Length: 326
Image (cartoon, rainbow, N blue to C red; front, side, top):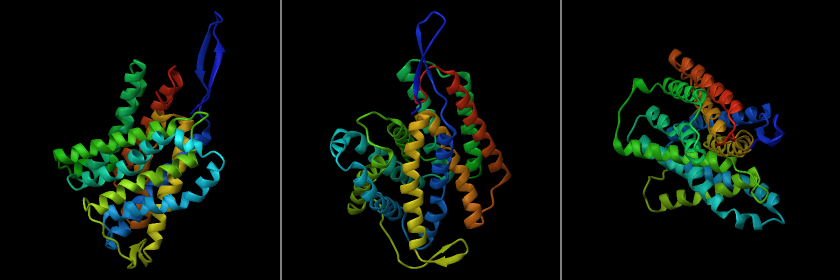
């Protein structure tokens, strides 16, 4: 979260202004988005090796929880009371940002094309603009609206949704549910206070909370849980299943979530959610690099529009008086 500094106006009445987020915040947000973007190639390798999406997601979050367990314990040593005081935050973070986003997205994919499902999930920045409007009673500026429209248009082009559009009400409902979970993730991740959890502790505890509903879904047979130890195709080679599994768990989950929380606290939920749209750009680039799936010119144009949208929202955040996270 950005610092808030009081300054004196001409009539000596205190006025609140925000300091500009440091460049480190944007770098971390982009690094987090890039890490999340690697989940596509890693996940595809597992799927081609016989893994079901639900099994891959459960293993991803479970391993990430184990990776973060020791650092989280060390971080909380002597301060275990923070877990009790932040239990609601941990559960909300784990149920929405960790488990909800992925489960609802995969259900949506069963009824919609991948592009449309992703487009629905990435409506979260627009939802956060609306959330800020409702909570602050302040209409978003023209720059914010223009940035939102530009980012959404760019997202649609990157995902090439016009090339394969099929709508289903059930799929749309779950896609929107994934968007609400994503929005909740940014709101929770951006909160910071004296008695709150550090980014590492929140991510670690949230992973542990998020894996529980995934295991429950598998145990109840609501989604197929198939896994295999056979070699899988990745980057033009046959490799051990551990390569993409550890990649999707350590890089695209543990590392991505921790850096995501850090950047969200520095940027605020709304701006962080717009910068996070760059994940789809990285996903396209990684698919090109690892899988040989060349991006179309329309996708490159869409990437440029997303950048324009983020810059417009950033400019709006610098001019508005309310906090960046709305």
